[in-house]
Length: 350
Figure: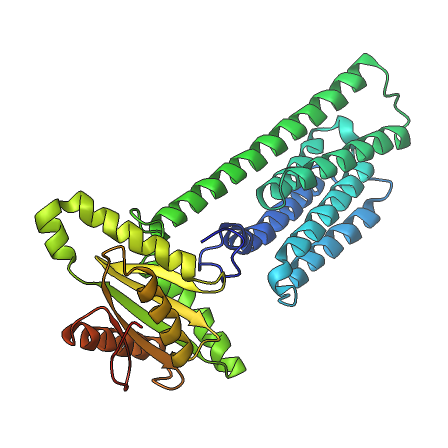
């Protein structure tokens, strides 16, 4: 199946899982920031100018973090919520630095918290944008403090810190991207049959659930088809297992070629395949399989086929698969190379 097929995604979405998992850690990171600010104020004392404003800003920021940690209305838009958090974090750090020693003090490195948070969850572009915003904050704080940027000390300080922010942000985002690619590759390995490239049994279980749920909501039928090759053991015994593998690959390619982009094709194990056909009743599935049988007359391939449909033959995916499997065995015991619909008489191709 191609990447453009309109199939529902597998259960694992590494980006979404990562964002959801980091949300809790983000609030802890924000509370750590508030703790560091509070300790600094407790040790150094409240600034003479703007001290009460800093305390109010700290309380407001902590209240924002506490309130946001209880919010659930963003749902799938957690990235937007995390972006808001990082921008608010930058604003709070800038206000704190303005009220204390500015960017020339040791607390200017607090900006790294926002950079790392963005790199872990929002990607390279968002992180570069935030570093640009931090650079603007640096220049603003220098100007408000009356310092001159073009002195060697200040120029070195600003350029060094911004270079660190860029390097840390880029490397963190690149590492996260590499982890996501690795997770995607591992998922593909776990969900694909290595011989045919079709989905395996595990993927079939994951992908069939949303198909069944959609059919149930829309009151539309779907069909489950079980296909089992006839005579594979004889091929393996007489021509070798490589010939048997070629026969399995041939059947897999033919199943993929006759499937629509919305259909699901999986290797269930050995020489048994399963197809899920959304918006297709039992007659539609039977006609499709009869055309498939007719197309392989000259190839020497033969296989037995069983069909069961929702809701005619059951209201659970497990029951439909069992009925289709039973119908396939009825086809095989009737001579093979034919389609059998659950509850109907077997029909040979043609």
